[in-house]
Image (cartoon, rainbow, N blue to C red):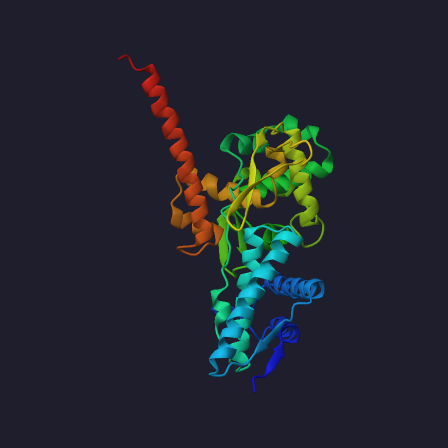
Length: 350
């Protein structure tokens, strides 16, 4: 007779192994704290789904009985449909978030199969992982130059926004993830033959990068010198993100920008105000992620080789994430090329 196992207790056991670092990444490195939190969030989502729908979350061992196999295939198909409907329709999430949780669910079920020795079929491997290509928001070179060099604008900001702007510019110059940027210590700064370098081991990838700092970043460090071990004054990522939007607004970057997300592959236009249908402004879409995106895009646009940019940013060769920056860079080249040839044709005498 087929045995049944409840999913939530198994997932709790899986999360416990993650917490105790019994599971590692492919290279043997410990899972990041962010990854551990993501699995805990998956547990909460499945628990909420179970409470709201009363859908049974279980695994059933398979036999050679064709009737049982057919029923199990239907169970997984129905579960996938109902769980994704819950994420999309009840909670209002978009493709990337839904796909991310389905991917983690598949990883967990694969762990159950291998670690617990339970054979419940591989129907879960058919779960489709939705993805969406979200346009990246970056500063162009003139906007970044404005933040670096415009002293009157800097002086017009209140102190907390001056510090946020400095931190933002530092991130745009170094391509650090926000988690690494906010964790910088004085010991991350190294002086080698009178040159100043930033040496960082990324929390997410454990890859080390050494970046030679330009003069304006050294001025930022001196201006924000902090007592204690940290390089910059302590701030939360959420507050930092809100400050970045305010800085963009005060800089006058208020041009409307369409914001489109996808659900089940279908594009959906988002508005800052759903009632008036007012669009988002450029400043509204700025975030802490903009720093890293701006840094990588700027390096590519100024002619730095992709391999060198990857070494600074910590991306692996063939990285899908890095390819987004390369693709965006090419799109901008194409736009400039189109404009140039359009002007050529308009000014030609035929």
